View 1 (cartoon, rainbow, N blue to C red):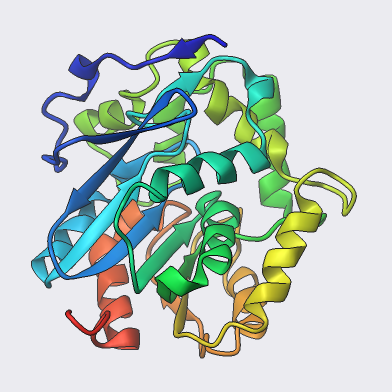
View 2 (tube, rainbow, N blue to C red; view 1 turned 90 degrees about the vertical axis):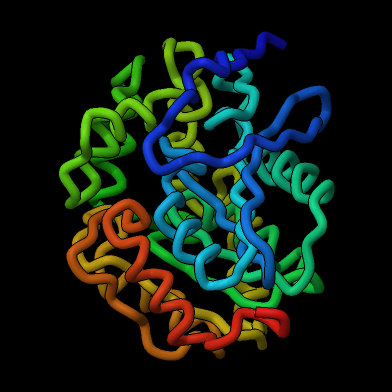
Length: 296
């Protein structure tokens, strides 16, 4: 298997991201995460085509309020190793690798934060490791069981016909914030060549479009598990995301989760709401949960 490892020099002096890289090995691949702060732990799952850099504004706010934050880079993203064969990437393999990754980190009573593809992956991890999870934060995501929005189909078709995804353009196009050139460069840092983008290129094509497609049954099982979820949950979707339109996309989860309560609107944000409104999300988490764990 051919694997691309992004040179460390690509990650030097990234704006707002002064964090020490930490690595584990899973099935011969080196996977990266950051682990910052002390206190009750928050685990943040990123999506496509971003990486843990997307959570930097939330990391800053959560650490400042006395929390520990762990952000893993999925296989194929960020500072994690990147198999170059698109066909290598499957939903099951992503779940397998992130599970093997998190098994090597001490975690208990964690607050799981998910968005985009971090939802199908992170929520599955959460329900399968409920003994380690205390709270859920669900943002701009879905569990794909055969129905998707028109906005998503437009994105899928773009990815399918674009052999070299323009990562920076995608990030700028899905934020309301005008990203500085150095921030755009930070999002592009992990992906200097077309082969390094195999995981990003593949993700949109992994979304099941029918109930019989790979992954649909497994995501339906996650839905079923969430119907019995008894721990606190926050559903917070941005008000300007064509892929997961507000309020309908969030209502799927508020109706599914007995503990979700009313959906929170993250105002003035687009699909990558962590970039547009990181502090607002942290405020919403603290408003909903109060103390994030006994030691917070």
